[in-house]
Amino acid sequence: MGWFTAPEYWLSRLVFQRALAAVYLVAFLTAALQFRALLGERGLLPVPRFVERVPFSRAPSLFHWRYSDALFAAVAWGGCAVSAALLAGADSLLPLWGAMLLWLLPWALYLSIVNVGQTWYGFGWESLLLETGFLAVFLGNGEVAPPVVVLFLLRWILFRVEFGAGLIKMRGDECWRKLTCLHHHHETQPMPGPLSWFFHHLPGPLHKAEVAANHVTQLIVPFLLFTPQPVATAAAALMIVTQLWLVLSGNFSWLNWITIVLALSAVRFPAHAPPVAPAPLWYEVVVLAVAALVAFLSYRPVVNMISRRQVMNRSFDPLHLVNTYGAFGSVSRIRYEVVVEGTLDDTPREDSDWREYEFRGKPGDPRRWPRQFAPYHLRLDWLMWFVALSPAYAGSWFGTFMERLLEGDRATLRLLRRSPFPPGRPPRYVRARLFRYRYTTWRELRATGACWDRTYVREFLPPTRLAGAARRP
View 1 (cartoon, rainbow, N blue to C red):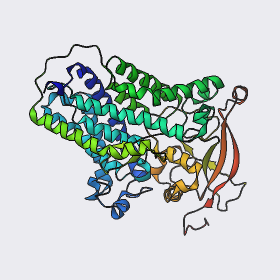
View 2 (cartoon, one colour):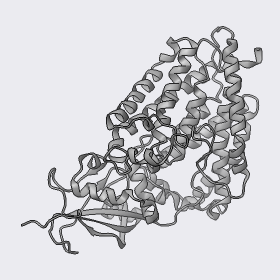
View 3 (cartoon, helix red, strand yellow):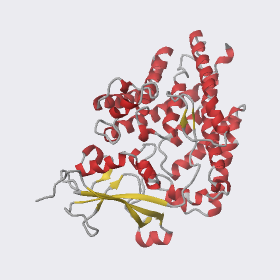
């Protein structure tokens, strides 16, 4: 079937595959370095407890058959190794079927992690990576030209990401319709980056121009992805520029980067296509069957997208094959932060020597400037942002987190930037207090060197100690 492949997209496929492998590598590295404290046998939300109550059919994962911290580490580090091999081009050294199996491996491993990840993996970019990674399995290698239908389905994902995000904004917070959301968003976003303070202080008219440009990119440009070249390339390039702007303005894990990866698959690079053999019949049958499956599963995401009650970041099947996306349907006007402190005093008083724990990414010390972490994902820091919005987000894990601080648990402390207590001497009591944070003005920054100003609001968690802990003699 001559229509089945698009040889002119061979370089687009190559760039897409290597970029996707890099995102996979970051995702597995994040899991490998953080899982023990978050999901391990003594984690804040242990996997063994989860698989006891959630059946395999609802959350397929190899950890349903067996779980141990050593096995999870093997899966995460094994995923890093496979991703690195794909980044280096190992799939090009294999026959077509072998390359497909190699691309299937990181998808299956990461699915096993996401499906037991619970709250820590409840972000839209997890499903987005899985959906994109699944289609990458069928994109082929240098033996055959890229299949047209898979390239189309990659654009279909990109369309739903952008258009879905645009719709949720227009239907949600009125500040998107009034073009005023960016008067607040750079200050109140989950994890500001090193340039977010400067973005916040851009002139008001420029903020409105940013929002208007965002609406154009998300509500109009996605339709151009399905037009002939070079219009489709121009549309994808505009999306890439928009995503790079977002990369500069905040820390959004790999959400922006996986969107850029998807856009790269729609760019037609000016390069001569090398000669390749015709696609084998079995490959054509498999690809067309997958396309039919994706078309069938797209029904619910499409219905959700056009619904007035549109929801964001929802998976409609346990394999995360076709999902719905969206971000920031509402924007906070005020930033709150939960500040965690501990004391060595036997009796906790307001004038006790309370020392503050420092997180890696979330705001804490007003004088500490935010750092760039994305595409790496600081999962605890992100959840702390949600906890500050509402105690309901704390669930059962926040109390366990405080217990681990009282125990001086090394795995938990490794998630933090710094503990104020020496190793082997954890605090007697811990507490959490809620503060309102705002960016300083240019004048305040010059006078104090602080990028934040914070004001105490209320007690979030009163002084707490381990149950049964005895007083020091």
